[in-house]
Amino acid sequence: MRRAIIPLPKPPFPNPTMSASLMWFRKGLRIHDNPALQHASTGSSFVYPVFVIDPHYMKPDPDAFSPGSKLAGLNRIRFMLESLVDLDSSLKKLGSKLLVLNGEPGEVLIRCLKEWDVKSLCFEYDTDPYYQALDARVKDYASSAGIEVFSPVSHTLFNPGAIIQKNGGKPPLTYQSFLKLAGEPSWASSPLSTSMSSLPPVGDVGNFACEISEVPTIKELGFGEVELDEWTPFRGGESEALKRLRESISDKKWVANFEKPKGDPSAFVKPATTVLSPYLKFGCLSSRYFYQCLQEVYKDVQKHTSPPVSLAGQLLWRDFFYTVAFGTPNFDRMKENKICKQIPWNDDDELLAAWREARTGYPWIDAIMVQLRKWGWMHHLARHCVACFLTRGDLFVHWEKGRDVFERLLIDSDWAINNGNWMWLSCSSFFYQYNRIYSPISFGKKYDPNGNYIRHFLPVLKDMPKEYIYEPWTAPKSVQTKAKCIIGRDYPKPVVSHDSASKECKRKLGEAYALSQKLNGRVTEEDLANLRQKLEQDKAQEPKNKRQKR
DNA sequence: CCGCCGTTGACCAC
DNA sequence: GTGGTCAACGGCGG
Image (cartoon, rainbow, N blue to C red; front, side):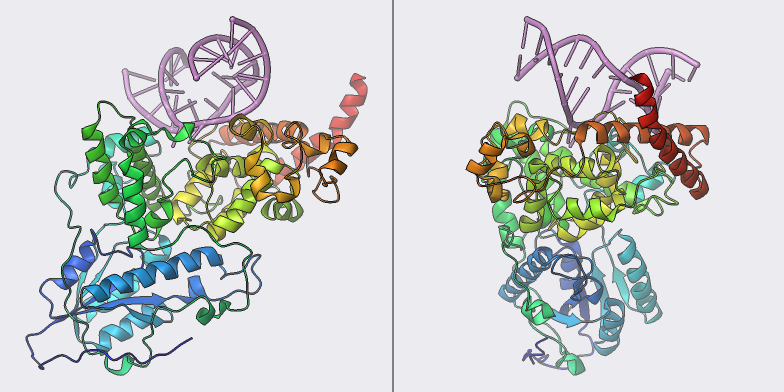
C-alpha cells in the first residue's frame, strides 16, 4: 500500500471559532443530492472528507473461488475504486479532496475524531446490519465526545424505519402493501440539491498525514498478481452514472414504455435495462434524483407504465427490499428468519461448483454464469434463470450458497436486494408458486433462437447449429465433430436431467410447504432433518414403484 | 372461510 | 402476439 504524504493546505489562521466537520463516505459516493456532504459543508470552516478502506470488504483472500476479497470479486472492487477516483476528482474541483485511510473503519473514525477537533460528524444513514453495528459504535463515541452526528437517510427513496413504524412495527411483506404505506415521497416535488460550487478546505490532518493515501489501485491493495481474462465493461463513478442516466432517460418513449418483465435477458450488446444498479448500489447515483428525472419524463408523455413494471417501479422495488430487510432479523439466512420458508435444501458442493463454474451442461445457464463472472452484471431475468436452476428448479442447492456467489461477483450486489431476490426465486419468501419453473432450454430460446448470447459467452459452442445450441447433448456425433465441440469432452453433459430434476424439486417443495403449513410455520431443525430423511426414503422407493407399474 | 391477487412459467391453440 | 390451460402456492382483505 502506498503511504504517500500529501501536502495539505494549513488553516490560514488559527481561529477558535472555526469549526471542522468530518464527512464519512461509505456508500453515497457522489456530490449531487448528498445531504450529509451538504450539511458538513455548511457552517464549517473545514471539512475532512474521509473514506476508509475496510479490510472486511477489501482484504485479498487467496482461498476465495475467484480473485478478490472474501466478500467481493475484483470487478466490484475495481468499480468501487473507480468510483472513489471520480469522487476524489470531483472533490478536488470543489477545492477539497478525498482522504483515504486504511483499517477497521470504527477504529479509524474514532481516531480521526480524536485527532482533528471535529465538531460535526456527517455520514449517510445505512440500514445494512454491518453498518448498523459499526455506526452505533462510532455514534456512541461521538456523543460521548460532544460531537454532533448528522446521519440522514439518502440512499433510498423512503426511510425504511419510518415505513416499518407506520405499519405498526412490522415491515410490509408485499409490494402492493409497501406502495400503499409509502405513498408519494414527501420530497418528490421539492427540488434536490444537485450541484455544489465549492467546499470548505480540508483541515490540518496532523499526525494522520503519513496514513493518508490517494485512492489505491487494485495492485496496491495486494491483488497485483491476478489477471481477469475479461473485466466488466462498466466503469464506476458518479460522472459515469450521470452520463448513463442522461442516456437512459433521453429516450422518453423507451422510459415511458419500460416494462421490466418484457425485457430481453439475452441482449448484451445493448442491455435491455439501464444498468444503473451498480451506480445505485454505491450511491454514485442518487435514487431520489433518478426518481425525479423519471417523473419529469412521465409528465412529458401521454401515457407511461406504472409500478411494479415501470422504471420508477424498479426504484420502489429497491426500497421495498430495503424496508423488509431492515425489519426482518436474520434476513440473510433461512434459520431463525420469520419470513423464510424452511426447506430441506441439499448441501451438494459438486452441483454448486458446476453451477458456479459454468459447467452445468446447459448452455443458457452456463452462458449466464460466464457473463456474471466476466461482467459482474446480467439481466434480471437471466439472474432468475440461474437462481431458479440452482435452487428450486433443478439442483435443489441452498439459496444461501447461490446468494454468496452473486454477492461476491455482481458489481451491483446489494445486501437487502440480493438476499430478497434469492428468497423470492427459491420460493422461500415473497413468491410461492413453485410449479412455475424456468426451463433452462426453452426460456432463453424464446428471446434468442439463434443462441447469439450463448455463442458470445461460451465460444466453445459458437459453431453449434442453432437446432442444438440449447441442448447440445442431443446433437448427433457428426454435428458435434463438425462444430468442433464434443459433448462430454469440450463441453460437459448436463449435470441433471431437467425433466426429472424439476419434478423432484416440485415434490420436495410440496412436502416442505405441507410440513410448514402443518406446523404453522414453526419448523425446527429436527423437523427439517426428519423431512430430509423421509424424502430420501421416498426417493429410494421410487424405482420400485416404477417397476411395479411396468 | 372464501375469493382474489401476485413484476417476469411452459405449453398449446389460434 | 394473445389467450387459455395446466396445477395450484401463500398473503391478504372481506
